[in-house]
Length: 236
Image (cartoon, helix red, strand yellow):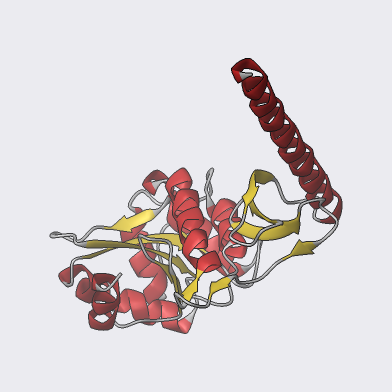
C-alpha cells in the first residue's frame, strides 16, 4: 500500500510539472507572437491563481495559464496597500543597472557615500543642467551620482552627438560638466554605451529627463533637490 501511495504521489507531481512546462511554453509563444521584441526571462505563478507573472527584460507582464490573454499593468495588494508590480520592477531595474555596471556610466562619487542613484540625463535638458549645477550639494549629502545618457531628440541629434563626445573625452567627468555649462571641449568619437543607455531608459518607461533611479530600483521622475533626495533615500 505504501509503495502504491508513493507511486501515485510521484505521478501526480510529474503531471503537475508537465502542465506547468506546457503553460510556460504557451505563454512564451504568445509573447513572441504578440511582442516579438520582448525576450522572456522567467514565467512563474503570480499572486492571483491562474495568472502568471512574466518577466521580460525590464518589464513585467501577466498572462493566463494558456497564454491566450496578456495583461500589462499594476497589481495591488489591497489589504497591504502595496503595489506588488512596482516592488518587483524595482528589483528588475536594479539588476538591469548592475548588468550595465559603473564601467559604462559616468560616476560622481561622494567622499562619504551613503546612497547611490543612477540618473538618466540629457545634456541640453534645462532641469538636467540644474541638477548637475548642484552636483556638489548631492555629493555633500553623501549621494553618489551615476550618469547614463538619454538624449531626448534621439540618435544622431546634436544632444546625442554631445553625449558621445563626452563619453569619448579623456576626462569624462570634466567633459560632462563643461557640456552641461555649454562650454567648448575637445570632441571625438569612439565605442560608447549611449545607445545601450537609451534602450534601458525606454525599458524603464522613460517619460522625461532627468530620471532618477534609486539603489532599490525605484524611479523618481524629474529634478529633485539634494536635501529632499537625501530624505527620500533615507526612508527607502
